[in-house]
Amino acid sequence: MNERTWPHRSETSHFSTLQFPIKNSTRKHENSTSKPSRVRQFRSSSSSSRRSDQFRDFAALPNDVLTKIAANFSLPNLQAASLVCKSWRDGLRPLREAMLFLRWGKRFKHGRGGVQPNVEKALDSFLKGAARGSTLAMVDAGLVYWEMGKKEEGVALYRKAAELGDPAGQCNLGISYLQAEPPNMKEAVKWLHEASVAGYVRGQYQLALCLHRGSGTNQNLPEAARWYLRAAEGGYVRAMYNVSLCYSLGTGFSQNHRQSRKWMKRAADHGHRKAQFEHGLSLFSEGQMMKAVVYLELAARGGETAAAHVKNVIFQQLPPPSRERALSLADNWLPLPSSR
Image (tube, rainbow, N blue to C red; front, top):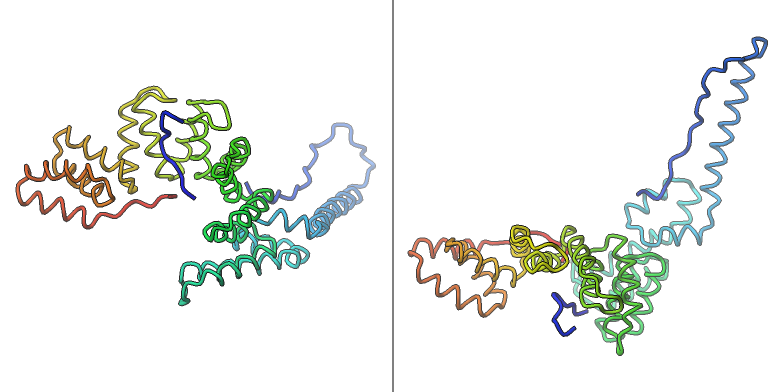
């Protein structure tokens, strides 16, 4: 799915803790002839009964309800939930099996674990995981269908995962509505918002773009800037670049060049080539020639043709040792890890 960056002007835990009985404070008018042993025995038996009832409540949860609750669980979460009681262990068996199919699907799709890439086998594995109720497998199967050009099948799986509360499914469904012919902007914003409040950074970025453009909702620049910032803080590189522009232009935020420079450098250090170009120009304007050459060289290697021209001009002004040092730094540079 293609995504856009800065808009053009034309456009807690799943389980609650068991409650323990709270001891009452000493009563002022206690009957001196009462028998404490009987009282303690009654309290003990009643509290044991309450704990027993709570365990029965866990075990009595229907398997179809349990499967829906745990549909987007990862394998570690499924393993932990399976320890709650025997009923849960049995009820979650299909989802644990789905995790095995999901793992094999990823191996076939990416050619990992000693197997050759095979899209058909990957899709078959993902579909078997989806049939067992895993929203993670539904999303991966939907993505394979989408990449094969079978968008209706992909959207159907995204929708099923989204309705079960999977943030990736909600985000992908929202983007599908954005790219539909014609686009369904209101549905797109609805599902992107669901993914965003669940903390899914890609959804936060896409929602910010919609709020920025006024697509499917009223234009709201302060709200757009806040969602850009949420996504940037979550490690989404494109959002880092847009946060920098928001601070630089005073769009949604008060103008703040210090914050703008901070986020531009973060985006550059995470591999955003336009940010590398602009940060390189900023370093050049401050007289930091060698650092400027490093970032401009990285931007040029990433496809920013204008960066190559500026770099060559600065490069000629550097002494030979600094030139070698700058190119060595660019050769050994690695982007910081990010969500995108």
